[in-house]
Structures are given as C-alpha cells and as structure tokens.
Length: 135
Image (cartoon, rainbow, N blue to C red; front, top):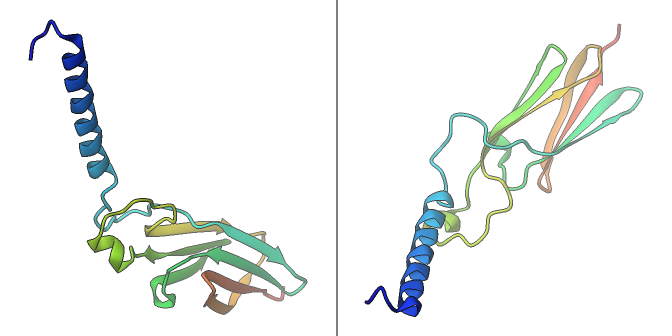
C-alpha cells in the first residue's frame, strides 16, 4: 500500500479502528467474575400504614434463598446476588439492561422500633412487612 493513495490509507485506518473497537467491546462487555462488593442497588418503594411499613424491592431473577435482610439501628439492608442466566454464560451477549451480580440496598427508616414480619418474594419483587413496635 502506498502512502500516496489516501483512499487506501483511510480504508486501512478505518478497518484498524473497527478492530480496536471490537476488542474493547469484548473486553468491557464480558460478564465480570463474582465481585465481592455490590455492583448495583435495586429500586425500592416504601409505604406506611398505621401498624406497619411495607418495603417493595425489585429483584427480578433473584431466588428467595439468595436474599438477606438485616435490620440494624433504623436501617434495613437487603443484599444478595442476581446470577447471569445460564444462556448468557455460554452464548453471546447482545444487550444487558437488567443488572446482575452482587446487590445491596440500605433503606433508612423513620425513627421507632421495627420488627420484621412477613417476607415474600413473588413476581420479581421482595415484599417486607415491618411492624411498628409498641412504645
């Protein structure tokens, strides 16, 4: 290839840039290994009735046994892991919009003593019932 022919030079540069972009995409969009720190925070809704608080945490694809709930000093912590589906581990990934990996969400609660009542995971949402303790 001659440096005097700008069409050939520009074409070679364009192909090299596409190759570099493809290598970067493979590197950055490859699913990470199991992380020790949380990688994402699930969205949360918080409701209050006269007797209790209701916390709804969106956890699509998370098995019930993979969720830990801790109440400590007026903060409710929901943590666990959403694994990649098996197909994503063996096939090509074209898009990932639903977060995966370790998660943790800390929810500061209004003052008062709370007792964890019901804990249900259904339809992709964890629903916690926190009863207000008698004073």
